[in-house]
Image (tube, rainbow, N blue to C red; front, top):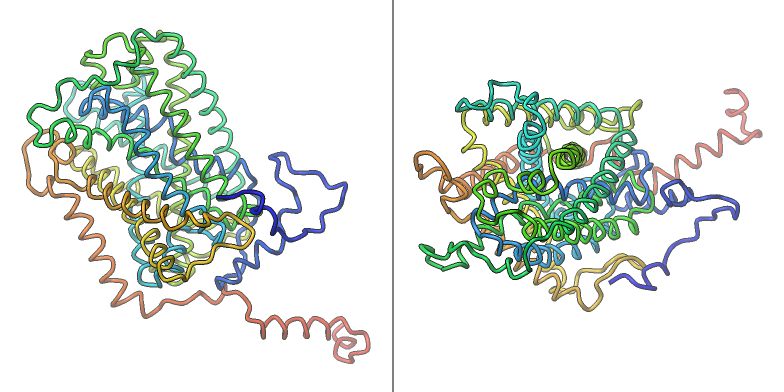
Amino acid sequence: MSGPAADGGAAHTGKPADEKPDADGTDAAADSPDDDESLAELGYKPELKRTLGNFHTFAAGISYISILTGTFQLFYFGVSHGGPAYWWSWPMVFCGQLMVALCFCELAARYPVAGSVYNWSKQLGGPHVGWLGGWMMMTATMVSLAAVALAYQVTLPQISSFFQFVGDGSGRTDHAANAVLLGAVLVLFTTLVNAFGVKLMAQINSAGVAIELIAALALIVLLAAHITRPPSALTETYGLAEGQSLGYLGAFLTACLASAYVMYGFDTASSLGEESKDPGRNAPRAILRALFASFLIGGLILLFALLATPDLHAKELSVDGLQYVVLSTLGSTMGQIMLWCVVIAITVCALAVHTAGIRLAFAMARDTNLPAASLLARVSPRFQTPVAPAVIIGCIAVCILLINVNQPQIFSVITSIAIIMIYVAYLMVTVPLLVRRLRGQWEPAEGKFSLGRFGLPVNILAVLWGTAMATNLAWPRPEVYNATGPQHWYLRWGAILFVGIVAVGGFTYYWFVQRKRTCVLAGHAAETPKEAADRTTSDDEADDPEDPAATSSS
């Protein structure tokens, strides 16, 4: 773990004694040449402007996890399938994801680069593993953006019927169609913000995260003040063990998906490494802070909600979920204030997901690993951000949303599969890292975050956890993949089919088409030592007053 030694290897930045830190607590001089040297080691020249400090990177990670978005969107699912005892899945998922996050912290310190999962898997497992990891993560990110955008429908109509623009909500497809409309508006917003530059995105995201954290803490206090039952209620299982081949364990494994769907995306804090100041030190801290804050605050919200709800057996608990608890416990006025904070949380969550997808597309395109690579890798000189990926990802997300208009059951299947692909993409990092450790080929960044002797056991646990969770997510259970309507085999086995098609189809395209073009685009490649020496010599000759050529050119 990081300790006194973690800060001992920093290079002296030469900061003047009177230079003050930035408003977010990051030294202005932290934007040192060392940040760009680590990028040059990977073969890239710096193009994205370093403007993000400590809180910005922390906010990126925690807004992707989004405590309020996840808990409010999935509370009903956990209670429906596991009863109040599903709460214990929250610390279980946290412990597993912590193992993954610790591995990511070492990588973030060693490789502070955009498109973190793609570049990490490429550095550890080679270009083929890197491409597949990036492809799975990018596909999942675009679906996740659409899924987060749908969360508006869960909250806005409960604030006011005004937000039910399609019908009155009683029609068979009213809710689904309205969800697409609200979601499309949100995706348009995230597209415009991301297209106008990372600084605007970071300001909106940081403000939204601050509001979300304050609201979450206030919600914890308010729910705690309305507790009506003892903690023993967390052993209530609703008798869901009946009819399960594995007893209550089967029900619990289904219910724990509600927690697994929330606690991921912390790697976003490192995906902005090329736009962060001193990312080798700040990114690992941001990853852990985001995960720990989400665990503590989210866990307390779920705990006190279960202990404060008026009736643990109320039908609304399994239908409206946490929204029902808030409105029935805190009253209409305070409840609606909290729901508006949830809307803000959903907004910044979608913004963070979109941002992560853009950086991933930029990183892959820079290596000529996507079609139209030069367009996707182009950084706008005005906005200092890749604009084309922002627009294209936004358009694809809206197209995915349209599936939900008449087929919400299929969309729920695709959404679940997107989470599986993220867990698989994480395995594309942790497995090659474990192989490197076992071969004695892994060396953490000197003087930065390191797991030391705990690296191997933590890495083994991360791989075991990721494999077990991906298997649990993909298990063809009807509760997840064919919850309503007529039963279809292709929905039940949708996870295995869809992930297989995306992985095999994508890799086939890569192997026969894209693999032959892979190389760093000329405009993005770092200078070779010879090029740097030639440029220095040329500059010196141009500045030499005794040089006749320099005199004539002036």
